[in-house]
Image 1 (tube, rainbow, N blue to C red):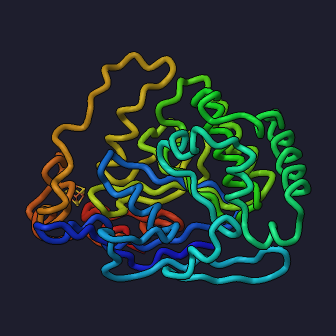
Image 2: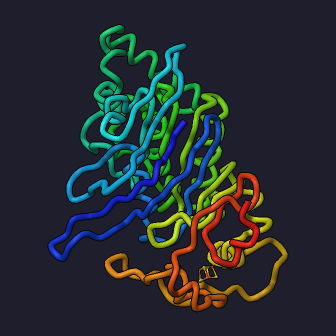
Image 3: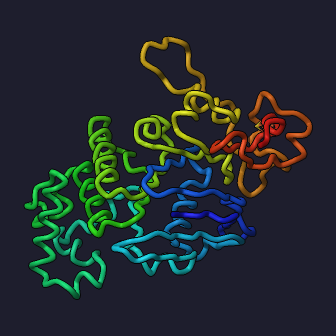
Length: 323
Ligand code: SF4
């Protein structure tokens, strides 16, 4: 469905390029919820923007590409980086970070739905027919159709987030990308949003890509996940396997820091901080924070490889078990 083919991107700055995504190479499948996790600044949002083809200066693709392919209404499609934006809303849609701020506060929601849906649908239906379809869709999602006459400033943050998700899924896109969909919401509302995303994925049988720094979000709703560190993918696999038996030292620390019911042990954070992307370490980027780092780690970049079927990681300690 989505092939990320050795992608590297950077931001152009007056001090030279800042390499934010470095040779990321993996696939996201049909009919799955895929999570992308990692600390703030590791490149998650930039990767999602690249997936959605929002490649606008100062963001530059240095090498590699994305391929979005699949089938909709019996027609096969395939788009690459530079073409993906031609199929926004129809085959792929995006719920940006702080999505609640995306809606124009002084425009009624019905106008924002009409402005956003794809041109073909507008050609086929009258405005009234389209609004009826939107109202039916909101009802399907347990949202009141009366919302269409409301202004965004009249809604709570959680309700605005639900509306944005409804907007992003209205055209039944094959892929929905969501950037930190539960950030800044209280835990009860967070749970409601996660349940809504899961229900929609089951209904549409599409692909959802969820970016979140919150490992609890990934544990609850994703099927597979990738862990990013300093612009690189360091581990990828089924979510349950990653939580049960993390392979990469960074993933072990992330999983170990999670509070669990009944576990009274003292939790510690990960010491140190990620390296500056303007000047990353020469070998493994995690070496300055890794208790198992060796001289080889400090000199050579570990290869991202399949450690066991469906399980990938980049760590010299795992090289002996390379398939
Ligand atoms: Fe730690 Fe070395 Fe593995 Fe990097 S390659 S995570 S420094 S053991």
